Length: 110
Length: 246
Image 1 (cartoon, rainbow over the protein chains, first blue to last red):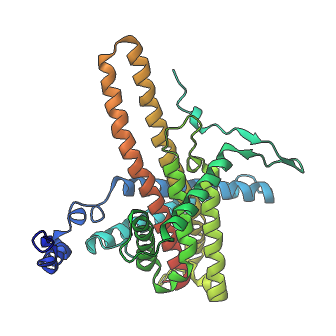
Image 2 (cartoon, rainbow over the protein chains, first blue to last red):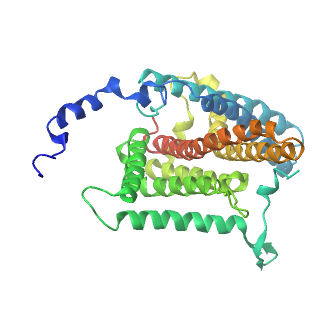
Image 3 (cartoon, chains in turn brown, cyan):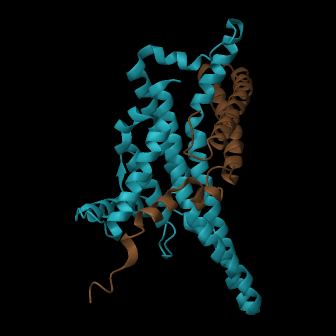
């Protein structure tokens, strides 16, 4: 009884496993989980730009009110913050590019 | 119509005043405790059996572990594995916060939808990584802010930009998590409010906002996971910067 109803699992187990492990047969990767830019990547670039600007303004304003150099550091912070935001956005896009080149294995180092 | 922003209100459950500071135990603190409790329970219950072929709970725990371990190894390198416990804790805490916020409870609350919570987490990561950088490399870590191969004349301009771009990291890290959670939850509540309003006039077209709410709920679960993932990945990348200074 037990011999007849044996599940057919183990005979072709290795073959099936190998088939599943073939890289091009992984459906979630192929269907663009990682390899394509997601809408979150666009959002991240926007946030980096705004955060750079906001952070620069905030720091400039804080140092201004601390040192009493009214508008100077605010302006400097604005310009440097904008540059820093662009730098961060550019870095994110480069990381995205590296990730797409890797074909979606991990996030890739900058 | 129901107020879609009502869900973000903070209530004092146990008022505590210490030296003029309002340190009350709020619904936000309660849900943080619940998140910690859930993560604790999940790991304890999932690892209790030590089965060779894992059951459901153990599979979940093993999957989470493998997932975060792979993430740390890929993004922070082998040396980053020393900080795996911190990263894993951070991931589980944020994931639990996001997911518990999806529970349809009358007193439900998503603490990750508050900028002060996410900013504190991001600031902790930022300070920890910076201290680690100085600890590992000493003052040599300051050369991280000097771009390679830049002409010396440009350095007075480039170094402040680099420093500033480093300092705004906690802002972009926290704003991203916070605005995703808040926008998603607000949108869900707005569309859910449409159902009630529309239904009171005419029942049939209320199907449309209901369908949108169903779709948004599924979408929001994906966002809840993805944002926890991305927060952790970025933490790993910052860790990588501090360790390797590439």
